[in-house]
Image (cartoon, rainbow over all chains, first blue to last red):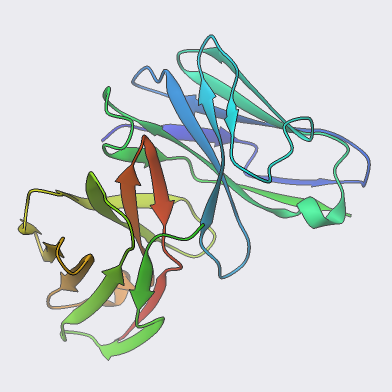
Length: 117
Length: 109
């Protein structure tokens, strides 16, 4: 199956700093990627849809200035958590659908564990 | 907002037994998907069933979909200790996936 990678897998940062997370589709092109966050023992919450060549679409309640998304190419989307605070500590997961149907099978990255001190 | 709601929330069974997990949803869907997540890892796609399908098989997995009841079930037959994980149903509609809260399955060796 298709492979999606994320980097870094874990990051610990100080409050007030910014953290960039990369999501790459390794063997296919993705015009759309999705970013989720997951709190311990909870479900995935969709944060935003990353669109190659255009602005990301954010879900209600997600601050676009806080969570900057850049879909630089057909294989790379980045999520930058700006001025991170302890409440931003979470597990961030990206996914990319293979195929034109954006709700067809999605391939998920392994996730990034962010801890803000 | 949460679309899918799985039950039970936690399930513990003996290796070799079958595990049945249910998912209910509220709005119209294009498809319903089941994913597995091992602790602290990403999600692995298990199976997708489209809204015009009623049953689908993949190896030891059997998924049913009842759109009139807005519900789906995932059956894992002959469970193995390696099946221990969290399982999520996700409904696909309007270009998005919405995940349920998940079911924690523990398979005792």
